Every structure is written in structure tokens, then in C-alpha cells.
Length: 406
Image (cartoon, rainbow, N blue to C red; front, side, top):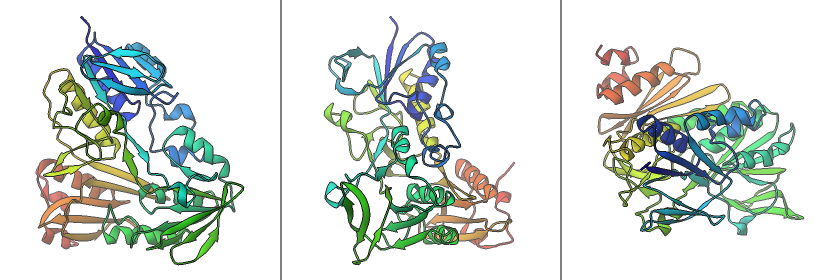
């Protein structure tokens, strides 16, 4: 009998998993279930080129409809899986349908952390950016001279601030922590992007909390802050982190802890249920991590597909990330977990720079700003274990690539 493969969630991980599984098994019945009405699409351009109209909806799609038809992958869009019956090996949809599975994959992703209603999070003009409909809702707000407040100085907030400023808006970023990017980067990288945004006219306030948003006729018109100051606003973008969409897994009794827990094979605590992408947590360098990146969504999903096809392919992450702000491309290789020291190296071109993170003398990560050579070199180092030393990194005349053997 044909194996029945169901994938819940219709993003990058879902598309990658389904495509990989089809290559391994040309006969299985593969179904992707997604609650949005669109074909699976890429999310990184949403708050950038899609928000500014440089890309249309079709350009976001990971694959055209014809690809799913050619590969005999059934798409169920606009419907949500509401329950997993592990004993009966079925999923139940919000329209009353039940679908049988032999192997099930959860690629449910994440959702933005909202502002509490008590501080004005429910007011009109307050936006979260997760999907196409979210971006469509606030694009009408984007016009020169308007006042935008961005809550949160992480990569999502800073990328949005850059886009809005380039469109001629007045932009202010408010970050509760002592510095922007504090959770994800060292002080040197924070300093680089703080200077970049200020040079482009964005106001950045660090160590400042939001007390409440002020509404008029249920629409945001202002904001009050923890230091007693206030400002008038036309709209607000919120970028204060995300939650893993793990409720379905929790209700099914799977092991969950700030994400769906999986082993090196992408397998959950149920041997017939797998998970991949932003919604998962797993062990990396002896720590539990949740990697929110396209790289992880693709690679972990393809590994999970192989394991669902009984090929026993452990996932060995080689994390990398990127962020585009103005004319700067930040590329990150590795994870800066437990770093104890950083070394800053200036690049060849004006404005290019890289920060090398070391944990007890061992290279663990690199932030490369407009320095693709540093990024690709570090990425290869981390993949092969041929690592630069702290002393070598400190020597401005030393060529890092020379560490790599042919």
C-alpha cells in the first residue's frame, strides 16, 4: 500500500521536506496542510521587498502550483489542523475532515509575540509581521513623512526600520534592553548597526521600555515610555520576538519545551511523528537551541524526510543567517553560544568589518558586515574544524583563509 505522508505547516520547511521525500519515494501519497490560502512562500522578503512593492505575491512562492502537481503533492490550503490522534494515526482539520497518516511531519513555524492588550496591543495601527496578509495590512501606512514607531531592536525591528526610513518615513526604534541586538550579538556588532541607523536618520533609544500606547477612537496615536516621555505616532510595528507554534504537539502529548523537541533524526517523542524548522528545539553543541533560519528550515527538513524514508540520516547543523539593512549585508556563520571573547577585523572595502567569536579560545561564530570573504572563510572553517586561533585573528596582517587546507 502507498505510504501516507502528511506535513502540517506550509512554509519553507514543509516545501523542502515534501520535495525531498518525493525524490526518495516516488509512490507515497504526500499532503501538505496550511492554514493560509497561499502556496508555500518565503518569509524573509516580506518586510523588505514585498512591503515596498518590489516583489509581487507570486515572486514569494517557493514553487509554482505546477511543481506540486508534477510531483503529485496534494496541497490543502486555508485550513488548520486542530488535533492529532496518535493512536488512530489521523489528523483532524477545522472543517471536520480526518486524514490518515503513516508518517507525520510538523513544520508549524513560529508566530510573533504580540504586545499585551493592556498596553494597547489591540489598537488599530499596531502591526505584527508574520505573513502576507500582515504585510498587506500595513503597506497602506507606508508613505513619506509619516511617523513610525518600531518596538524592539532585534534583526526584525532593525530591518523594518531600514525599509521604512528608505521610504522617507520618520522612524524611531525603542529597545528595552541595554543595547540593540543584545540577545543575538556582541557589543561590537550592536555598535556597528547603531551607527548605521543613526547615519541614516533613524532614532534609536536603548534601555527604554514602552509604558503604553495611546489610542483615539481605537486607533493608535501616541506612545508613553518608561522614563515618562511620550511621542505622537501614525503607526507601530512590533518586533519583540516569537513563540514556537507547538500547541498542536502539546495537545497531542508530544515532548515540548519552548518548541517541539526532536532528536538528531528530526523525530519527536512519537516514532511516527517528525518535526523540522523554526518550531523545533534540539541539542547543538551540548545545548538546547531553536534555530530560526532558512538554512535550518531547509537542511533539517531534508534530513527529516530522509529519516521518514528510513535512511537514518542524522542532522548535523552548520548554522548560518543573514540580515539586510540599507546597503549592508550581515552574514553570520555559526552560533555565538557561550562566547568569552571577540576579535574585530576590518575588511578590505570601506565599511566592511567582521567580528570573530571565541569560546575559551575556540572559534564558534563570525558576524561579517559587507565582508563575504570573511563569512565564506568562517563558514568553511566551522564545517571542517580548521579553525583560526585568537592570536591569528588579532593579527591584522594574517590571512584567515590560509588556515584552510586545500
